[in-house]
Amino acid sequence: MTIFEVWAPEKPVKLRLGDRDYEMESGANGWWRLDVPSDPGADYGFLLPDRDDPLPDPRSPWQPQGVHGPSRVYDHSAFNWTDQAWTGRQLPGSVLYELHIGTFTPEGTFDAAIEKLDHLVDLGVDLVELLPVNAFNGTYNWGYDGVCWFAPHEAYGGPDGLKRFVDAAHHKGLGVVLDVVYNHFGPSGAYAPMFAPYLSTGSNTWGSSLNLDGPDSEGVRRYIVDSVLMWLRDYHVDGLRLDAVHALHDEGAVHLLEQMAVEVESLSTHLRRPLSLIAESDLNDPRLITPREAGGYGLHAQWDDDIHHALHATLTGERQGYYGDFGSLDCLRTVLEGAFFHAGTWSSFRGRRHGRPVDRQRVPGHRFVAFLQNHDQIGNRAIGDRLTATLSPGLLKVAATLLLTSPFTPMLFMGEEWAATSPWQYFTSHPEPDLASAVQNGRRREFARHGWAEGDVPDPQDPATFERSKLDWSELAKPDHSAMLEFYRQLIALRRSVPDLADPWLAEVEVWHGDQHVVIRRGSHVVAANLAGTPQTVSIRALPRSVLLATAPGVVVERDRLVLPPETAAVVSVR
Image (cartoon, rainbow, N blue to C red; front, side, top):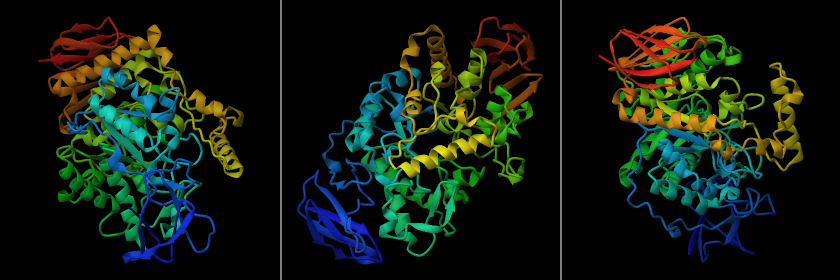
């Protein structure tokens, strides 16, 4: 027997199972239920009074024929897990690695990604972060237009494929973080709002907002939180990255994010392994990551764009758009010591004051995920060019050194570790001509306003845009790329072996700088970086013991100073 149920508080629902229709039974709080004989693999849908064709289950676990096709019964208990000894991977002290299943390998599947896990283990990664894998319309996509929040995308390998990936990752000592989107439904295949008031009257950048605090919002909140718990429990995932939480409009006394934190903590206690919630937020508000007992929401970490912007603008010299306030060495010092640059300060990009300060004495740096590159910061550039296209190999190594010796939780973007040259571009495969055209034209108009020729902006719908964005693993056989990979391995190993370099306490970080150089004191270690194209003598304000790592040969020690070759960084133990 299988229990079929769906939330539809204002209309009767029938079940279509195979070629037969069944009347469902009305239950409490707008739920319709029916217990009927069914085997795993049976297709089904729900019939509403105003439609002749069945609709997919809003909580469908499996959409083998795409988001417009029937749902399929799936038995979570049937999968043969082998990770019973897995005790989890906590976020503090870890190195994250962000990847997109569709472009990480030529095949673009969970199973193909499994074959590359040894590469990540050798690199020193702790947690693999997958861009969204829940079902979306079309074959390939970034994943942020998902509409089935309980079903892994079939082209990647479906439910069993995701489980095989997580199981294999755990077998190799890697945790898995899943990127999830709960701030909007994608533009095609979003049938849930036909059943119940999932949407509010408001909107955000990507579409209609979710009804988190209006009439019948309890059912919507339950829908989202149950999806959160499902990924962590049924797919053994170790954490979730919550997309754009600033777009979750909730005026309730208990914010949805706090509700998530409470219920995830309960599940973590039951499973006896750490489960992490990581927010992407544009608010610069440390309340997100402040424990609930201190009046915060209790999330475990948040992405920190200010760190990225400070590093990127300093290294590249770019100042357009939201980089306008960034790029000075004073700015870099501010974020390395205090996580946020905009902390109640004026933002010229927003035209207002922005952010709230971080308490350096109480808030550990590991609650901030820092990165040089990620899917947004590359893919939302007009041509999706990586730092490899802008920075010299020397500055790429300097940048990596600053990131991986910082007090924050570092995250790499796939291919960064070998200075991959393949772009990461915005790609879609919308089958609807009108939607495809709207995306194509909108993308070109957007970048034309910023001075890019429309012909230079890749067509998101062109399959070549997707193919160009796939990693070229053959680059690893080339000397320059293999040398960069070896450098990243050494740097991550050094971070792991020297406690000072991963110490999260911001109050212990001291930064000073001069003309095109910066020095960071990390306990009994110093990180010095020369950003100039000429040699520089840099005061490290201590007597060095030894140079533990240098990005290039030729570093000279002179009492309390280092002579650094052009575009070079060094990590030094000091007295």
